[in-house]
Image (tube, rainbow, N blue to C red; front, side, top):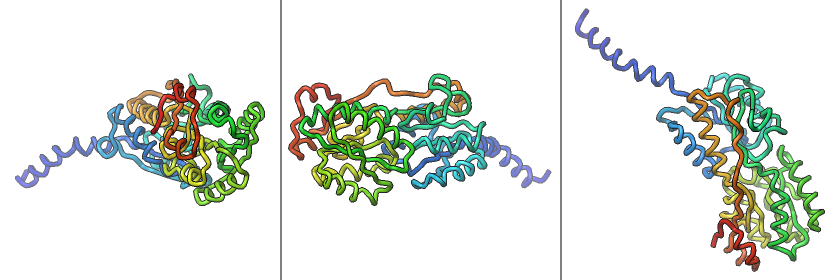
Length: 323
């Protein structure tokens, strides 16, 4: 063997482990209804890192966003399956996870959103998901009546309120039904105001002004929180209409208050599950993560700006007051 050939052979041998390691690096397919906001992406990455996975170091991430066009999700899911990703993380609503589930029964799927994964057909039960799907939910759709009750306490003089929904979203109907039922019990006049894109927020807020509503609730939908811009909250505040949000992020953007779990923790828990599955655990054996603590967050700065006096009894119950 010639010296040049021998050196080349030694170099190839030294490089082989690195090549093999690169080939063995897992790939995560990220399937979302729209681009993930930083407030959700950061805790998701933190959850992955808890399991020892960092994008670009020992994990490849392939992103596919439907850009709020739900009919694109089946093709995007099929693309990820064809690419043989190790795990699919489906988020933004139940639709991405449903599309992924239709596309594969073998690749593990982890979801994160605010609905009921059992009624949405994603898992057999919360404790025993079965199949190849599991994840985390913040059950935001089940808190509408509780938030309306708090609205009644905080704004006792308000009789006309609105629920802002995306009529094309799969979580709209259940929240409308719950809000109507709560309004009847609390003696509130409820108007349903719709928007299917951020370009319709101005008209939605203008409609609320014409209806002379004293406050509006934001429904759980990726349109209102996943972009991370919270334009509906800011536009409502400019018109003097306080908003009741889904999570702390809404309140930090200028909302009056919110009641619910820590939304960021839902995405962190989903990241943890992805890491555990990449290490060999089965999604069928990982119970759906549900929130165990619910927080009341109040923006006192917004209250003062709108001339709203928050009852002391409410302030003492608040888990956080933003001043």
